[in-house]
Image (cartoon, rainbow, N blue to C red):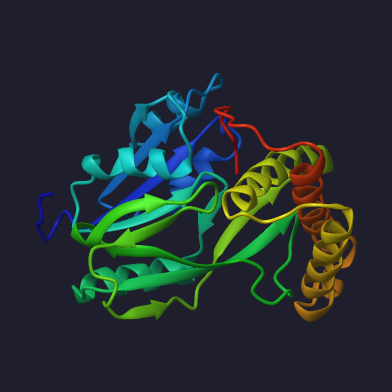
Length: 264
């Protein structure tokens, strides 16, 4: 890693067939000194668009999971701070200013970010924090590796560094259409079932119904999804269904090792 005043921040992005979103994502990260894109084998124009926008693009189609792809990215980072991003996320202006201030501080710390979901054409900004709270910005030398089946996280060499939370949020364009949401539901339910199997948990209809009901109430009522109209209802329902099918798969369709590339 080379540290210099002009080489402070790297933003790393994972992609797979994201030609509709990648330009918006990279544009939001254009203040970074280095943008690295790890592509998992796109068959559309994702890599061409990313290259035209100045990103360093590397195709690594040997998919072994999100954490593995992030780990393959780390040796490519030439900056002293690293922020990781997905292709369906956008850095808002407020968050950009906070990231720049954090990098300028030179502090050896970690910073968490929360999302604003954008679902079915509407920003669900009236919901309470729906997801995130994930460490996203670090001193690069402090990142040991990424871990996790689907919601990967950074394991730090020094976990005692100060932890800060950005006020600005990422925009997360995770559910553009109902059809796309159902495809993602199937993939994530399978991954969630595998993770629970590894933890020794049991499946079943009643466990699934309990998990679905609990999470629907948590998102739709406690986190105020009801304030976001039909889009808020659909978002909360899809989340609840994913919770149900994790336990159904665990009981009736035991998850198998799957190397298929998964999109966010």
